[in-house]
Structures are given as structure tokens and as C-alpha cells.
Image (cartoon, rainbow over all chains, first blue to last red; front, side):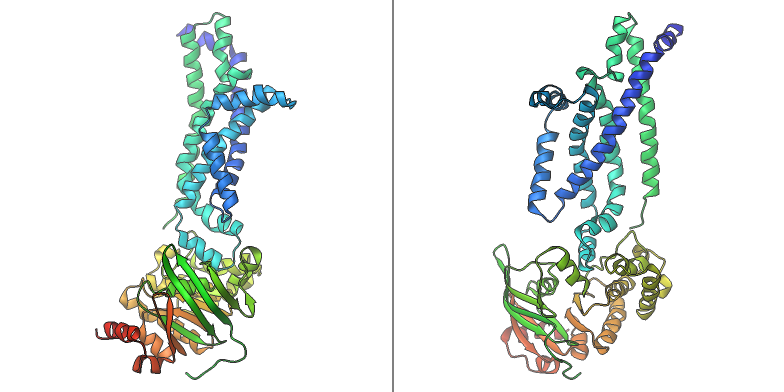
Length: 218
Length: 251
């Protein structure tokens, strides 16, 4: 047990930096994918056929591409176009693009839970598409979106570890450094697992909170 | 009720056609509704009467023909269409109240967000309208807490809050329990008396008899008869109308 604790305290700097970057990646890609995913979701339910087609194509292409491949595109292929992005921003962009496809589908399924008649009534009052979406549909769709959205973000939190393979020092990169330092892998991996559990807890709490807050009488 | 039509008609449909796949749901329909006129549309289910009603504010786009409202052809999409819709009140069979808003918010949302009215003024008029339809005491409840009849009266108040030039009713009493039909029809009758231009799709023959200026009978997407209610109910000309009336009036 003392040995197990020693692994953490002796390497606190590495753990701290790794998990700090994991959280940073998660927050940046989280906000990015939420915004992009909402936009894509709005496209998929919009009355304009071209926008719907774009949204559907994006989701089908990006969602079916392995995340490592999305990373590889940004880190290895994009620099060939003389666009140089650092490793960390590349990782943020890759995670954002990839996760947005899943967020889009959560938004779309949430929108589908709101009775179409309400959107029709809103249009009949003279509301624009944007007003129908933001005033009538989304406020009611949010509640249905919370549980699947949290699953998407928990998956994204764990997906940040892919960045370790592309020269970003985050929690997923800790084991490699630790084996160089000759630390026992069992203890290292357990500590990383505990770290991720701790990071997930606030998300679970947030889900509970939002589900209660948005409980609407129907 | 005598002829109240004055000036140019408010709603004009000219040779309107619409298909749902192979179904010709509106077949060369031409119709004009004068200002202050109450037109009741009846007919068997599937005759296209709801589609006709929904086409007037372009909730259903049409394939060919023209629809003119207050002298202006219906815009295709965008802001111009939204503006036109704000001038045409619509009441649906299934009420379609906004479930996450209180009854008063349902009524004031359009005036505040679409018409950009001051919230205080919209609230005041909203409460007056709720009082008028007899549910002022329900203002702070949510739609799910109201009976069907109360919800439909709230939906009428929501449409009236936009101060529309015309009101469209798409089977407003068909989803109601029988004992609640009367309270909704009372509100509609008083609106008709005040000179509101109305197009009403309904199965309520009593309402058609006493509140309509004209009765339109539709069958298979065609406008078959167009006559004052007394004439239509006493002497229907077409076989389809005779057949329809004999089925619904014998019970």
C-alpha cells in the first residue's frame, strides 16, 4: 500500500501535468463540439434541403471514421498542405470534429421528441426557423438530450487519451513515461483509472442536476 | 347572418392543386373569402379540407395555382412568409400549446417575440384575451394541467393575441370530449359575430348552420358545393353532399 501511494507522490508532477492537459483538452473540445454539434443538428432539422444533406454527410463520414484516423489526418496530412498546427491544438480540433458528429445526432434525437405540432403552431404565429428552434423546440428537447449527451462527453473524455499517440502529454501518455522511470505498471494504470473516475464524477452529478432542473410537466 | 362581404376578398385561392404522392388532395380548388366572412368547410375525411385550410398560411405548400392573402400572393419562405403567417391566426385539432410555457406565456410569446411588443402591454392584452375566452384564472398553469376545452380556448386566445386579419380553424373540436365542444364553439361563435374573417374546417353542423355565411362542401380534393348554410342543408345539389348529409344527420 505504501508502495502504491509512493508511485503517485513521487511522480506527482507528471500526474498533475498529464491530467491537467486531459482536462484542458476535454474542456476545449467539449465546448467546440457542443457548438459545432448544435449547428450540425440545426442543419439536419432545417427546412433547407442542402443544409440537411450537408449535416447528414458530415455525420456519416466523420462518425464512421476511426478517431485515430481523424488525428492522423490533422497531425500528419494537414501539415503537408503547408498548414502547421501544433500538436495540442491539432488534438483539440480532431476531438471537436469527431465528437460534434455524435453531438449532432443527440441534438437531432432530442428535437424529434418534441411534438411536431408545437413547431407548426410556432411557425403559424410567424416565428422564424431560428425562433422556433431556440424558443420552442430546444428548451423542451434539452431534457431528452441530457443522458445521451453525457454518454457522448464521457466517451470523449476517455477519447482524449488517443492524443498521447500524437505527441500530446495527457493522462494517456503517463504510462510510457512511468515505464521509463521504472515504476510498476499495475500501480500506474490503477492511478490513471482512479483519475478518470474522479473526472467523470462531476459529469454524472451534472447530468442528475440537469435532469431534475429540466423536468417539465407534459 | 347576411352578406357582410365588403371590398376585395381577403383570401383568394385560384386553381390550387396539391398531391400527396399519387393522391390528388386538392384538385383545381378556387375559392374566395371576403372580409368578415365566415366560411365553414365540411366533407368526408380525406376530402382535402384540412389541407385546404393549412395551405392558406402555407403550412402545406401547394403544387400549382395561386393563393393570395390581402392582395399579396403567398411568399415562398423566409421573413415575408413569417410576416404573413403572423397575420393569420391558426387553431389546430390537437391544440399544440407550448408545453414548457404557462398559458399566459403561450399567449404573449408571439406578440413579444414576433411583433416585438412591450412585455407589459402584451401581458395586459393576453390576460384580457384569456378573460374573454373564460380561462383568466388558469393563466399561470401549464397546458398539461388544463382540460382539452380549456387548452383549445387558450389556443384561440394565443392566435387572437397576434391581432390577425383572419382565423383558420382546422377541426378545432374533433379532439375534444363531447361536453367540452360547446365552450369552444361559443368562443368561435362570438368571434364570428364580431366580424372576424374565419375559415373553419369542422364536423359541427350546428355551428355551420348558425354561424357560417357560406358552407363549402369538399369531396375527393374537389370543391363540390359552395352555398349559404340554409340552402346547403335544405337543398344540397350534388349526390356526394346528399349522401354525406344523410350519413351524419340521421344520428
